[in-house]
Image (cartoon, rainbow, N blue to C red):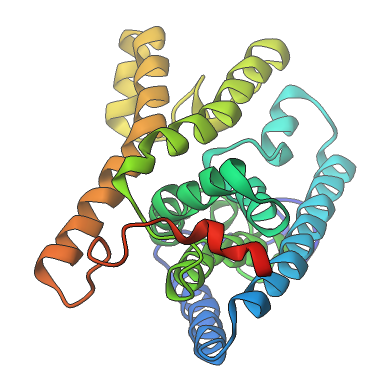
Length: 264
């Protein structure tokens, strides 16, 4: 469960192991979501505080495990520095749990418009630990649990009206994302890392072709896609739900409810 890469056959993508992990953690998320139906906003926020600290502890353990097993070379840094797009969720969740005001609003916006999309995308195509480790390895379990939280926490925020999605919050989302993306670019240039895959693409043919043709064009494109794409895509989905289903995400009270947490 804690051995280095190569000790056993990896789970792989779209395998029974992959499906089993998603179903297992998905079932736990659904059951927990059902248990929180009657929770008050204060109870939800207390849970956020405790659970965000649990996720931080797991992340620290992951970092220590990687350093012990793989060292701190540039290639090894890619394994554990929490500065990939999905890593932003951890910072956003902590900020939501422990702050108020505009920074909390920006974090809420990122979770709803960036977290839901990236979490779902990862669960479908988990291009990390499952490619290198068996399904029962700590890194595989942590990856699926971590990304399942994107969806669970997003639904809890929406259900308990801690934040109401609003397309006018676009610049909150962009500003919040830009902080971490800019830091990733700086570290890539200084340390020679590939955080957020800005320097070298995943093994996806169109991106590989673009990178071979013009690395600068690829880097600019992937930066722009990650900065704006999740918000635009999620907004489109929210609009379709509001327009064609009973789930009127954009028909609820347009006033942002984030400031209603003063008594929590």
